[in-house]
Image 1: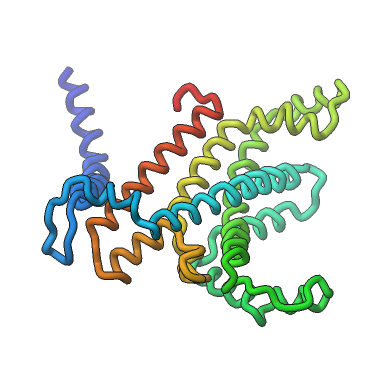
Image 2 (image 1 turned 90 degrees about the horizontal axis):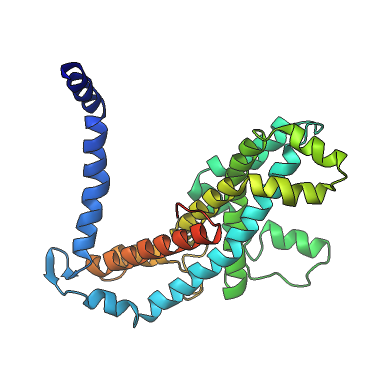
Length: 291
């Protein structure tokens, strides 16, 4: 018993610093933000207002607009990215494919580029006189430049293209890793039985990758609900508020508008609630008993 007690003490000694750091930099700020969400006022002059901030959410037109914008990115971009990443990973898992290392690196590379740098590059590429419009006009696909940044619809499309370009390779790595752990004899048996490539994909690959698909779907959903850098650097939330996301609205409430940290914390917890709801829904839809 004494040896077991000493082993427990040694174990806690190893993880004590990590526990303290997690509590100090994760849990304490979360609790403080929750308390702050029930307060209102400028600077340090905060007053307890109860649930008024949460009631304000349903009347705040800017919040509703940013919520709609975020949902559009979520509903459109996440499925496209997941399907594209899965498709690319299957192609790059082919044993007969040459230069596999090069293609894998090239597709994953956007995920490790600077968020600000690539956002600024996209802003210039999709400008009215940018490279994209120039190329489209040269091949006579368009007669006049598309207002990628200043038109509400095209601005959303630009944001969707940007985040798809960056994060598809990131998700592809998870699928590729999982595919390499699938026993090749399963596919060989399916081919002998006369299964087509599509049927092998739908009946073998997708079911076996289900846990990874669920994981990437949840992480992509969380990332999209927290989307900030691309919108801030490419469109700044414009034109009007047509591309503004929840995270950018939180930033504006804290630092751009008249500072209202209490209401900003309330919107932040609104995002937390949405993340929890969507995560539970995805677990349920996937049939995961742990969800």
